[in-house]
Length: 483
Image (cartoon, rainbow, N blue to C red; front, top):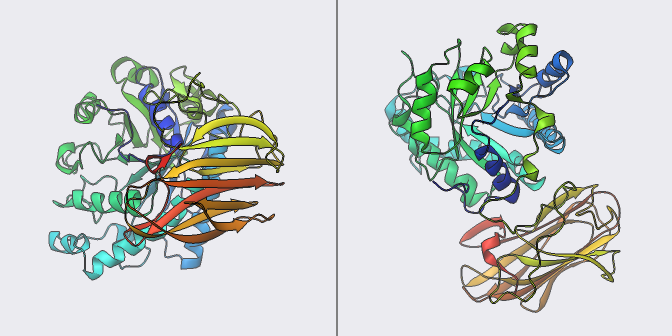
């Protein structure tokens, strides 16, 4: 079983997070706490007041269920994104879920729990129907907020359409559930380029109301992590063992719980769980303060101060350089004594102190080009302000025809493709995107040079492209060559 994400274009932060999760088995369990859409910063603070520790995993909601207006939903989702970015910067792990309303209905809880026939569900997953079009619209609306997290470098444990083996949600106990999962998976990975997501498939614990796990599993090629929701202290050994068998080596987790698990019991008999996440208000309704303190003090339980997935190496890519903007990571990859015999994927990045490309401080291979350093330095060798970067190499088109290239930057940027200057915005500017067009031949590497400088304040730069046959996406590493 490969330890790489199921999305081949997964970002470096997502790959690092998954590598970190793989090595947790038997070593500890990450503590987690869910918060609601309307108040995304409630319960971790209560835990800190009780224990002096924050949970390692913060759970967020992107589904709207209280009849909010579109403006209120947008405001609440934006607050979730801002909270998640802060959590990530503090060293924590982000997981998100989506209580989706039945396509085409109002954002109400009753429409999440809508009784839906197999025939109605079939229309939802059949392209061309009104229900399918509403489904895509809802999926795309949520994608806009996940893109903000992607652009901020935040990996997300993405946990959609949970408890699908139970009959209480409109997507539950449906023979074509895998079609629904596949629609979102393809839409987010291929159309929207959401390569910061790790895909968490999350049924309910099997019981009188929930079917066995296997009936609704999308397959190892569309799932990174398997989780299960456990309520009413139902921590049966069979739940752990059956999910572990289905996972075939992939990480498994407790996606939701009411009563907190006993860490000693998990350490002894259920060591494969890598996180638990207590559900919202059940933190205090289902657990006494003494229990919360004891769980968070247990040596097997990992809190936010004890984890830093961004530091974990990539076992499948041992020479990968550190992600910029994380000063605690290694600054440079090993540099071979002689040039590589063939081009490597990515672009060569030369990093300079100052905005005039005179004082070279660092050279490494980068890719994809999607960095948001905020007010930090890209690496210890560089200042946080007044630096510049020149990326050089080649881009390999997939198709013949006209491509549009996009550069999102704060501050200046200019881009040459195949010897032509197609974007020239060498000015101080806040976050702004510019574009330029050029015709290219499929499979023929075209020389590319991207220059960027940061004056003061926030620093970010992203390089994307689009084609009539390829929706806009950040140019993946596989399409970039060092020479």
